[in-house]
Length: 209
Image 1: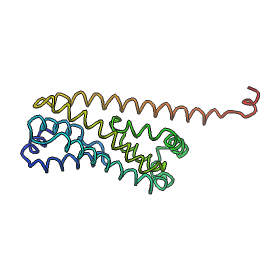
Image 2 (image 1 turned 90 degrees about the vertical axis):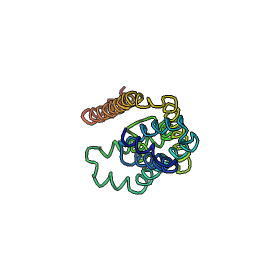
Image 3 (image 1 turned 45 degrees about the vertical axis):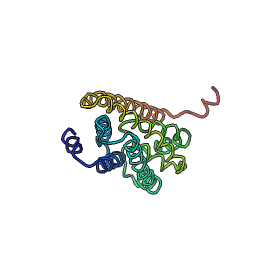
Image 4 (image 1 turned 120 degrees about the horizontal axis):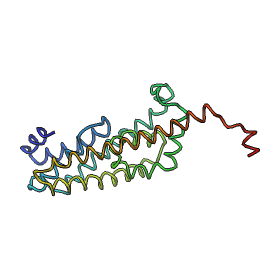
């Protein structure tokens, strides 16, 4: 990443903006890509006067939203085929339908938090499409989420200047914490599913209760 940033610092500002947009786009499709660190690094360029805060913020957010839109489209057009064809054998189909129901109920709130859920962004956009959430509303909320997250990263880079690398450990810890929480939730859901499968509720007992 340091080599990439060093190379970027010699580029024309237009190419720097393009790089920000491309990295943020790719990160939503092929995670993990170091887009967050790149945005922080570009924030340091703002402090040096190489690029502007608003253009960098807008292009980073547009790139993020465009990547989200691609995964949304994949989920909407091919999600059911991928799941029902058994391509993801480690995910029980019944659980997929449950997650789909959750998305239909709470999906928009998850999309708002999407950019802050490091490591899960592609999954969120995939299930948003598969759950057939409103495209227009989803894209607006995705852009707002990206705007808020990228503004924080750019501001942090601008304030840190040449010390922008200091935030890398914070982002690494944050990413690990979020990933651990998500894995824990998934394990709890899977455990609940397996327990119910092995101990089905007897309708007669349920009625007596």
